[in-house]
Amino acid sequence: MSTAHGARARARIEVTAAIKDEARRQLAAEGAARLSLRAVARELGMVSSALYRYFPSRDDLLTALIIDAYDSLGESAESAREGARDAAAGPFEQWIAVCEVVRRWALDHPHEYALIYGSPVPGYTAPDVTVPAAARVGLLLIGITRDAHHGPGLARPSLPAGLRPEAERMAADLAPDLPPEVVTALVAAWAQLYGLVGFELFGQFNRVVEDRETFFRHAAEQLARGVGLVPGPV
Amino acid sequence: MSTAHGARARARIEVTAAIKDEARRQLAAEGAARLSLRAVARELGMVSSALYRYFPSRDDLLTALIIDAYDSLGESAESAREGARDAAAGPFEQWIAVCEVVRRWALDHPHEYALIYGSPVPGYTAPDVTVPAAARVGLLLIGITRDAHHGPGLARPSLPAGLRPEAERMAADLAPDLPPEVVTALVAAWAQLYGLVGFELFGQFNRVVEDRETFFRHAAEQLARGVGLVPGPV
DNA sequence: TCAGCGCAAGAGCGCTGCTCTCTTTTTGAT
DNA sequence: ATCAAAAAGAGAGCAGCGCTCTTGCGCTGA
Image (cartoon, rainbow over all chains, first blue to last red; front, side, top):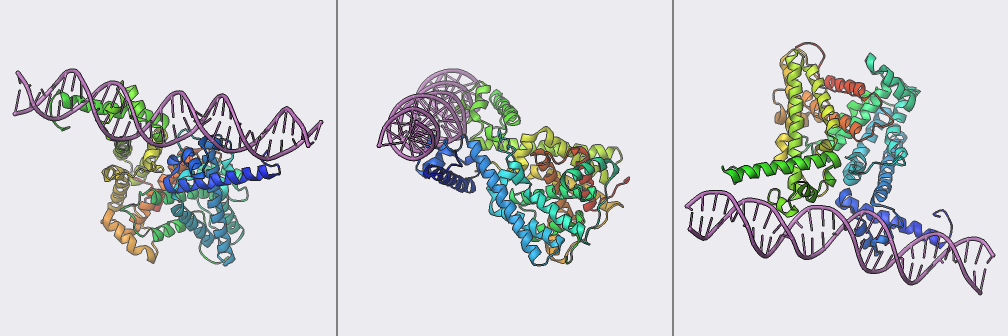
């Protein structure tokens, strides 16, 4: 039992952490598809079969890394938001801060970003365990917009009639206190943020965009305006 | 020499095509990482080493598939645009048609879409040969916007001062006859389109967006407005 | 006609994920 | 303190992978 006390349980926790650390190192260095259980075991001085006591398959190890990556990104984004808020920045500026730290995190951890937001590893489907961790950035963007909604600076985007049922459904699920128009724009902005980061990270901007920092900031501002945020103090 | 005449050369072309066909089948069925040279050879009744006469490595086979995928997507997009134009649809409607066919193609060819727009296969970097094929959709979107620019229906987006140099550089490279503001919005829209498609395809919309067709159409319209396109006849 | 080239075949290397068995070590209840 | 049970490590082994090298056959162009 992993929650039991004693030297054995502690050792198990430590070995599990060591495996994840080494796996994360290999992931960062070589990418997910080159992550090898045998190589991890070799580096840790154990035999490959022993590793299966801790992770029943390579996919389970990958799942653990995916959750960690989501959490790392989510934590970065959340602390960026709080940093901006502590600096008396309004929702618009908090939005920008979160977008920029997501981009930064992606550029700093390309293989981990690819693992969570890139093409799924073939034959692998993320289990439901990953859902809460995966939702953190999205929830954060919702939270920022909610603050703006309760304050002064939120313009309401438009919405075609055909989309209204779906918009209301999404709003009921994600943020019942926000107008459906805003929730729809939020979901789209979230996906588009991912597109901007992905294009830069995966090289589609090579020979196209040079000053990516400035370009990204402008795009992030447009996304913020798309959900009704406007610059200015709280 | 592959361009030479004779039965030998023809056989080579046929075998090469058969290999690509079988590889594409496996790619569609299992994904890029599970594409196996040995399995392709097995299916074709040849021994694996024989296949290396046609593709010097697995990566070269993948490159061939990538180019084909880009071309297939590009062709779909181009004919969708022409179809819309033949139906007397204006640039706005052509834009929507192209976006929707890109999404459709991605849903119909998920593994091929992942191959070209998802995380790069680790250890693999796309050679420059792929660049022209990869640019087709982008060029098409530029072309649609250019038509609108020469016609009546193009509003000019705004641009912050800091982005102006980069915007002018991009415009000079991509579309010297279009205003830098429009080119900037185009590049962003292109990336965001990819984000919308990717999120749906890779499952990030699970449990979030239900009526994806309608949602996507709305988002595509917003992208069109972002580059200054407005609904209406030519 | 015949040398040379293209091509297929097979063996083999080192790697992978994973399973099974065997042994050692630790644990918790008697 | 004792002892059975649980947990963990070690090693062999299976099937598959990309890729290389050598061998030998058959078509082809001079």
